[in-house]
Amino acid sequence: MYGFLVLMGAVVVVFFIFNVLPGDPVNMMAGQRTDIATREAIAKELGLDLPLHQQLFHYVNDLSPLSFHKDNETNAKKYNYNKLIRMGETAMVWKSPYLRRSFQSNKPVSEIIIENVEGTFWLALAAITFATLIGIPLGIWASLKQNSTLDHSILSFSVIGISMPSFVFGALMAMIFGDLLADYTGLNASGTLWETDIFGEHHLQLKNLILPMITLGLGPMAIIVQLTRSSMLEVLSQEYIRTARAKGLDGYVIILKHALKNALNPVITAVSGWLASLMAGAFFVESIFGWKGLGAVTIHAVMNLDFPVVMGATIFVATVFIFMNIFVDILYALIDPRVRLK
Image (cartoon, rainbow, N blue to C red; front, side, top):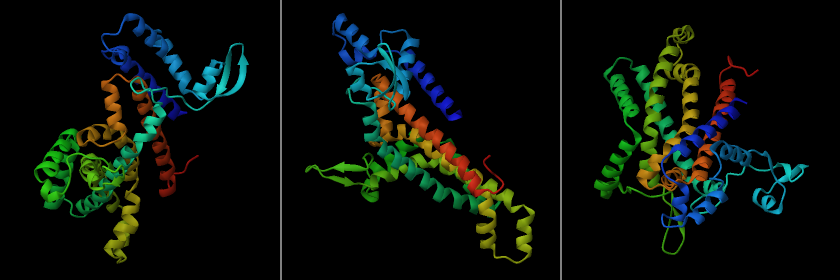
């Protein structure tokens, strides 16, 4: 229920923000020189001539699996619903959430999301994997060398990683490693995961993933370093760790088997939460590196006032974020015996 309220809050907030932005979607679709009658017809067809609260009601009704629609052949084909109760000309129906069609391409928004989410997903997954594999060892290393030069260097590096905006760091990465040093690195300043040659064949280009992955993963990696370090320092000061050392257990056994396992809870929360957040954070990174994904499509939709695509992407990312948080709660109970779901 909490997740449902969060999702509805995201829908309402983005709906009203989008509708107070300057610009007219009808003009973007029809062009500035179109006559008034054509513009009015387009606005009526899209429901943009209605008061704002009615537009919101109709959008939520389209989005809801349980909804009310006029029972006719046009709506049956449009929504592909299963009729539950007929009430005059209107019927209560059960259907898949309808995200409408793009103002610009007239393609179903659900198809646009499916076509483009793969690139964003792999970019976010690669970034969080990079951040985890680098961040946890650095955090452990810093905790074992507390107050040393190495510890201070790692902490300084993590502060820079947190402070550096991804669009600034991304532009520098693209310019330095994808352009100036391209002959040595073999990397491109822009590119996608799959590229098509002149014969129409698709080729996997993993090298195009490297720079966007590092750019997107820098912030999470810096946070994971600090979380791991602070959590490890707290665990290493516990009595059972001192007891294990007094019994003569090997240092690696104490760190990996006893300390790290109990120090991972805050790290797991960060990693799981960041995976969903990175799908949203990837939007600007995709634009910098020309990466084909949901982010680039959404930014293009914002610039062209393509409301259904913006709302569809928002709802999708919010849903992923909600389910990831639920997954974290369950994972907590599995890892930490002190936590139990009731």
